[in-house]
Image 1: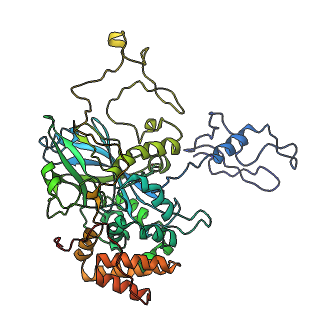
Image 2: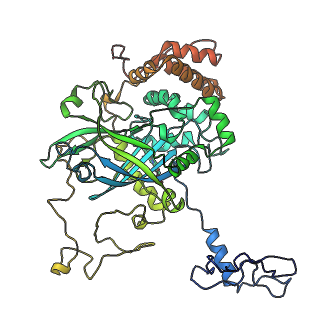
Image 3: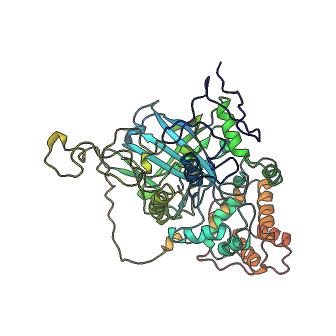
Length: 527
Ligand code: HEM
């Protein structure tokens, strides 16, 4: 038995002083020097001033002062877990991506779920989109599917992302509100963005108050490409289907839970994994070709539109299991860096202008958030396959190129370091591109209401009621009458009955004219 619990009085005031022993190691400074007393600073006399000389206290306080890093500019509140992806039957005809080539192969994974608008300390059950970000540590590099629990997005072009996020987060003068409820800036912005109406329908549905992370779908949102060894490519959309199915709470419950337990979702994930009830999702692909893309009623590069599963059924190609909680929230969940540009041979981008902007944004923001260019040296971000390159130095560099060569071509033969590999290396699908340089929005990105209507019509009566109630609740928080009226004018283009319900709920005396649609609405679409 050690003396670790022995409390040794150290001063007249009766302060206590726990000593090392038994299983408790000797406390040291960050430099490894043993510490004798962790209660008292060094003073000139028992009641004298603290001495600047106290290197132990200075080191301790200095480090504490630097504990915080910037929270994510969006998706600041999140919770992560480790797991694996297990492939079903190989799909070499679709993709050469290594993780899909062997049935039963397990690829390590890290997943982070998040809310979008709230700060790091906000509550879990805000009405908000949920992030569903997956990092797959494949044998050919890290592949990140940085998705949400909703298959479409608010905007079509990354150029508008800073405006969207400014509008949804706290206003710069008053610094409130957070994501819990609607406010003028968000709805003001949305009321000028007809392209957001489809996403707004999903946002006001029960999907944005999920029962837990385990009961959510996930979506890669954008159209990506897959390419096989023959160089043939197809378009693909990624879907995660929860094994437990989907469940939501109702708004009344969400409000109460937020008050009683703001950590409701993170606690649920932690407890499920701790008790061996491992959450699971299947990865589904919607695969289609150029012909389908040409004929489809909407542009497959437009992230405010989805492809109905009735038109392109989902093919399940593997499952994701979360079976390990993190040991260190900061090291893993806080420092993990998902990035849409992290793809592997066999996967490629499409020209979706939202995706193209994201490919810049994540790397850029993470360079700041994680303190420089070397955040791939943090274990949660490092590949788990062999890797070799000539990048070196910079803040916090943990490894540099080995040996003499840090450039190529070089004449050092076998000691010359890594070389590019035309056979195995990443090559872009050789799509022919060209056109007049212009700032533009394609005409094929118009028609902002048909899929919004399609979604509303797909809801059960009860779900439609929840959606209308959510709109009334959120818009009733908007102080500026003109914003409410503009929103009702948009809803008239989605569904007249819905618009009337919301107008009545908001006590708008005169129904406005429908908002001017960018294109004639299409009543003839299947619902
Ligand atoms: C963070 C999803 C659009 C910029 C995230 C995260 C998710 C996500 C899941 C959290 C990642 C994590 O857990 O660490 C999406 C989806 C989008 C979308 C599904 C649309 C389909 C955009 C756009 C931009 C953007 C258009 C910018 C042009 C960011 C930034 C972060 C972020 C800067 C913070 C990243 C970090 O600090 O690590 N997004 N996002 N996102 N997103 Fe997006």
